[in-house]
Length: 394
Image 1 (cartoon, rainbow, N blue to C red):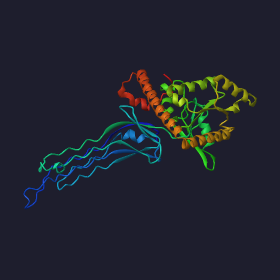
Image 2 (cartoon, rainbow, N blue to C red):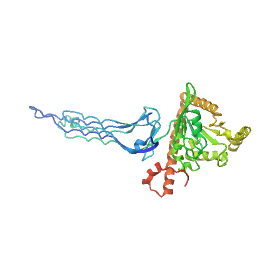
Image 3 (cartoon, rainbow, N blue to C red):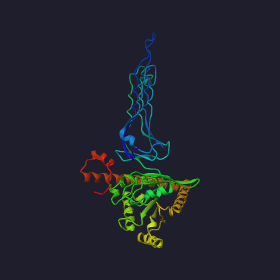
Image 4 (tube, helix red, strand yellow):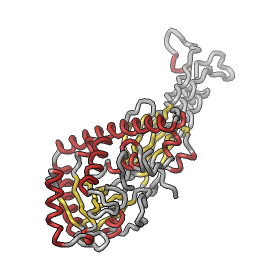
């Protein structure tokens, strides 16, 4: 199945049913009173998170959703039937954004979680409602109200505890293969990984976390180069970022400068994301003499002024991976405990998530504008931006 993580849909809630204009007519009753019933409410549209879905591809082929309209009232004070609500299933991890205002309507991050996205129209009133002591035969009714119509942007962000990031061929896929049952494609050319991959890392019988491997980043990723702008957002829900670095790159580049490239791209894309807990993982140490390991780590710390943890591993040889996973598990356990016990921490995390969503939408909007400028496109051609994959910066 094709992985699609963005889609735009139009939702149209049902119209409320009209009120009925009617008077009671029966043999031997020459002046029956008003008996026009009210209409039914229009159906609403709700999104529900479904753990069995993992892509938004279906919304590319079915972009419009309409809920059932309410029936009109009938004589005999009969109220019209309300329209059925429409329940639309989306993958867990979907963010819902109002396309016209760029307002975040909600995040569906738990299976079964629901979000009302279009309210059905209210029913109209029949003439029986308007009967009074001074107006015994009202001829007034009200029509049903139209349902809400909204254009929504759906953005799927994988739900993971740990996110892997780094330049192409840094060894992200090798690491997730070494520590989990995930089996992403591994090869010695850039952009081997084209879609996010998830793996469950089990540290003990009741201790595990989810790791996400996203395609490699290149310089200019925050402006749309490579696959970066499409997949940086998948790191938004992670608690820890593991920044993988190739200690012996084939192009003979300086690993410290490679680290700075990724740091700059994160900062440009979202300062809040860049401020998230991030550890350096120096990979492929099997290609470096053992006596040079300590000196290289010291060089990295001093060059970057790095105070966060640094781990030296060989994903292929599975050297150092166990210690890394245990450290990650301990940190995640402490973070989860803090979120459960400290309300202030939960409120601060919610604020950061909202700020991060805003920064990401701003970055994507900026990337779209740059893409249109480079390709001489208009705003009507933005669908091409969503499906195009640029492997190099123009």
